[in-house]
Amino acid sequence: MADTVRAAVQTAPRQIEIREFPRPVIGPDDGALLRIEACGICGSDVEQYKGSMSSRWLPMVPGHEPLGIIEEVSESAAARWGVRPGDRVAVEILIPCRSCDLCLAGRYMSCKNRIGSHGGSNPPERGLGLWGGYSEYIHLHPNSILHKMRGDIPAEIAVMFNPLGAGVRWAVHLGGAGLGDTVLILGAGQRGLSAVLAARTAGAGTIIVTGLARDAAKLELAREFGADHTINVEEEDTVERVREITGGDGADVVLELTPMAHQPVRDALNAVRWGGRVVLAGLKGGRNIELPTDMIINKAITVLGAFSVDSRAYAEAIRLIESGRFPLERMHTHTFGLDDVARAIETLAGEIPGEEAVHVAIMPGTERAEATRRAGDGA
Image (tube, rainbow, N blue to C red):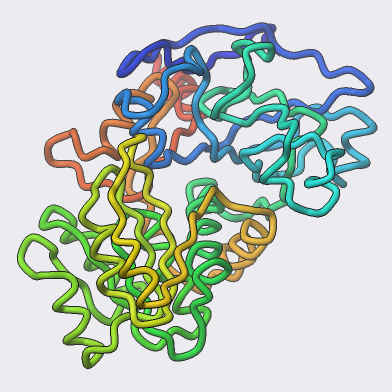
């Protein structure tokens, strides 16, 4: 068993290097050591990589969508999580204190004393460590939140628990999409496509998805997943097209999922019906947008900010994956090893000519498998 663990460390915008860390020792009151099977790449990872997000947490091991196998676990953590070595688990991003008034009330995502996160912002006192999923192993804090998953599902499918959880939470739990509703999804990325699946499962009547000209393959996949209409925003006016589809009423629920773009926020407010709901989840890198507050008031629009994914949404997304109801393999387009993290992120960002990415995952075992193959070939 190796004494060191390899991980990808982001040190600055567009700068990632592979480093070795001491293999964590799991004590009797510690958490666990998780062997990473796969870690999905999120759109926010792309913006962090490019420098559009805050750099104050760097250096760090990115990757906040880790899926893996419990390698070692302390007795107390095993009892808390209900796991044992060999179990496959999905890991939530946030690590709450579990003891403040908000945590005790079930609102752990607003924890006042957050210990840190997996693959995201961590307090300086935590230092640089194996907290993120772009690594061979993650050191799980005893307060980490885990969800057991079946082991017979391909890792590249099982690791979609995070984007699917976002689709469930944003479209259904926050957006309230239900029977017969018209749902407008601005953005055809993996979370937009996941929202299509969630809205369709919830019984939405009409689903509309927007994208750019370069998103033609994603829009086609949206239709395959259950979207009734797709809009190329470079050729059609989103608001006018939605009014045409809905007979002038507008959409009951609008999800704004586009990164950095401002116009879709305005489109969301214009395209929603009177008394409808708008869920904002597309980060804009700290760039403020002037909102038409009179319109929000006069149309009685409910506007909600969607922060991450909670346990309820993760659990429902995992059940959706395990049901096998949808062809999720159609959404996974690329797998990369640990040595190619930068290229993987650039692929998801659309920066690699000829590559059309939807869901991209890092699978550290890829290098081990390739090394074994080469050794067998005598290379």
